[in-house]
Length: 249
Image (cartoon, rainbow, N blue to C red):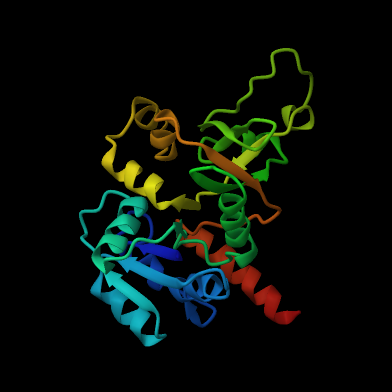
């Protein structure tokens, strides 16, 4: 069984109630759910939320929804809580970011395929970094990959460091931006929740380092899709502008 779970937290420091914001006639959570629901590999697509407001919105467009505790510390924990509350044991659980309304189903499929074709514990997307500005932005998480696509490390710093390079770093080496979506084997999701936050995770404030430090294999799947995570009102306006442009074409 393969299930997609969209964790959706109502509280947000920079954009309260953001799953419910209107994006050209649909709430953000509805847009993400509709995109995920086109993936035929999913046996179920579930919204996992801490809010009765989001439950009501999900029921309006007839989505599968589970109410979880507001005390879950992360979206990954919320995914695990949803699985436990449903009493199911899927083979693969895909943690789908609820704040990426421009999500493309092809990216989800690539990650599912990566788990089905390898022995990796987790699959996650990466996209090529095309500018030194993005490379040096600590909000852009960098993934370092082995030749076969395995993740060696994730960092907010630009790595590898180019000691002798002249000019643009991104013109000399392939740098990869991590896209925060994960396809977990069930045992890996369970292991993540059972482990305490690791030293590297705390240092970088990157939860994926918990499993990596524990020895899990992450497969980094190259994608061309550059999504927009909506964290601020300005992000929401960028998405609205893109949706308007799509409608005009």
